[in-house]
Structures are given as C-alpha cells and as structure tokens.
Image 1 (tube, rainbow, N blue to C red):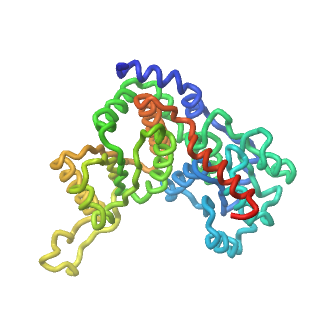
Image 2 (image 1 turned 120 degrees about the horizontal axis):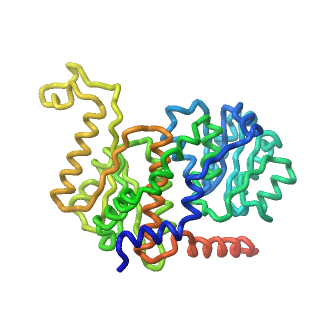
Image 3 (image 1 turned 60 degrees about the vertical axis):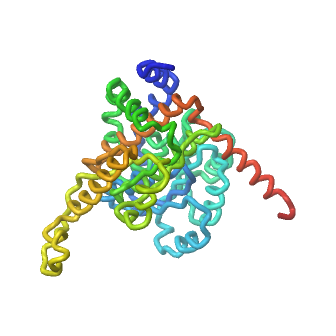
Length: 374
C-alpha cells in the first residue's frame, strides 16, 4: 500500500496539466469587455459546461447586478416561458459544449436560433471540426476555445467558468489568487487525504451533502456530478445526495440517524451573520426559546444538534464551514473538491476523467433517433 506522501506525489505528477490549468491566470481582451453592457445573460449548456457557472452565480449573487438565465435541460415548458421574456432580444447568449456536438445544447439553441446574432452570441467549444465551431464560423459569432485536455466537469476555473464570471463583473483573478499556494502546500494535501481516509469511505456507499447554506445548493450540484461521473466506475463509487437543511430535519432525519449505517455526511454550515432577529410578544411561554434570537443562531443550534446526534450514533461526518462569500472562498472550494476527487480516484484505482457508461447511452440515443419507428 502506498504511503500518504507517495500518493500525494503521484497525484500531483499524474494531474499536473489539470492543476496547472486551474492556477493559471486568464485575461480577456477588449472585444469581450464590450459585451459587459448586456444586463441579461442566457447560458446554454449541459453538465460540466454549465454547473460551475450556476454555482458561481448562486454563491456570489449578492455581488452580481445582472440577470442570468440558465438552460440546462430539455424542458419544453421552461423554454416557452423564457421565450415570453420581452428583453430576450437584448440579451447576451453564451453557448458551451466541450465536444461541440452535445444534442441537448444544440437542440436548445435551435429553439432560440432567431435571437442569436453575430454581436450577441459567444460559442465556447473545442477548436476542431464540430457542429458548434462550424456554426460560430458560418454565423460570425464570437468563438472561445475550450481546452481539449480539460474535461467539462473539471473546467470551471478555465474559460468555461471564468468567462461567465467576467461577464458578471466578478473579479476572476480573485478566484485563483491563493490556489497556487494550496497546491504547493503539502500539509493541506495531506490533511485532505487524511480526512478522506478517516471517513472510511470504502465501507460506505452513500454520501449525503447536508447543507445549511442555500447559496451552496448549485455548488453541491457541481460536486454531485464531479463525484458521480468521476468515481462511479467498475462497480465502485458513492451515491452523492444533496439534502437541504433544516428543511430535511422534517423529512429525512429519522432515516439518516436511525436507518441503515451506510452513509457518510458532509455537513455545510456558515458563520454568516443574520439581520433578522426575533423580538416580540408573538411568542408565548411555550415558544420562548425562539424569542430574542437571530436567524443564524437558530439554524446553527439545529446544525449543532444534528452533529451531536451523528457523534452519539457514531455516524461518520465532516463539517465544512464557510466564513466568507467571495471569489477567493469559492475558488478554494472548487480546488478542494477537485483534489479530493483525484485523491479518491487514486485510492480506488480508477480513472477519474472518463465516463464510458455515459458515452454508451449517447451512442444508443443516436441509434434510436435514426430508427424510422420507435
């Protein structure tokens, strides 16, 4: 069995291209700064092409003054609703697909094709012969290259996530300002590895993201794809489940605490202060525990009660506490979970970068669509 130090050394070597891309600076020329005038941005993509941007928008929404519309599914009613937007013709469209041939992305483009002009549309795909690259050339749209060496679910700190962040007027350099230090910090990497081993992941197959921070919901959808698609292979992997708290205290907590012992919990909490405080005669004698309390104090009390119960039942967990809601914090979160993914893949002896089962379904889908009758 490899020592922790050797695992770290091999992971850094085997993933050097990925980590180099994550910490490298990105700058956009003036033709993209001119596109900042748009107040509404429509982003069309699937999976890793769009989940990272949704995470950025949700986590940093308090800093963003623009409206973002995300189209990341085949949902006819949603498309009809979007097309009713009177300002859609004044929007910027950003279409993202690594392969440039993603069926759902191209189909959603088709329904909005009359709105795509040469001065309001950006195509982000690999610089090779594919549908989107040809579409960009033929229609004189802005073209941005997707790094062919970086898979979609690992691409959030490349053009895929940073161009939308730039268009949202966020400081893209702040996402990366401390990432080089983290990757070069062996203590940080060893700590990540030790946390993974401490949770005894081999004995569990369900991973619950128990989340007390609404701003993190879309980030956890990004993590869900990262873990599921990277690690679910050869009969191995975890089922990543997002559970929103304290809402799920009233629906799933009984199962979590008293059901099968097949789960690991990642508990997400925050030190964000609340502006809402209860102070009223509204609460009678039986509800005085809620009086003169701040909103975050109540939520943290619920979280602490949950953690105490996990401890008493010897259910493995870790807590991730968010202190700041800024670009630097989110950049570190992206990096931390990517590092955990490749460390887990190393321990599990699997390739974290392919998705053979997904490709099989894509091939079968095209086969069925070509049939005259189905």
